Length: 115
Image (cartoon, rainbow, N blue to C red; front, side, top):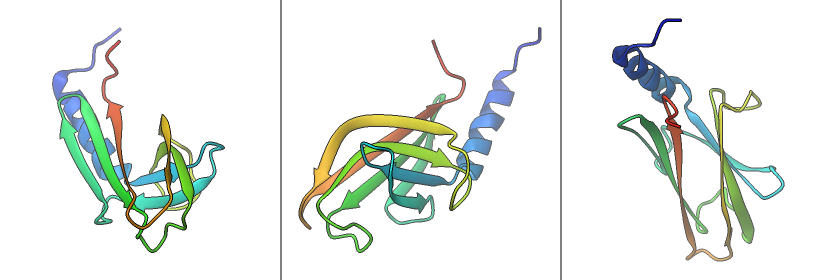
């Protein structure tokens, strides 16, 4: 069996960053709260080593967030609606209760996954 080269992994990370452009934040039951694109000013995308990272900052004052709301999961997609989840990350539930509350989610997809 052939190995994938370092250059191929770099190309894969670049592909993931360029094409998996949607991050959905969900509640504890997996229900969608909001799905954002990487062009949204609340989302930053970066490649750090073997990781493709999306960082999302949500505030209680955001117009698309109705408080109180509990966040517990982030999911990566390549389409704006529907689609198949490509990467799922759970985190300790956090409830935004007021306009002053703020949540930072860092979703990390490792390419290749290091075991």
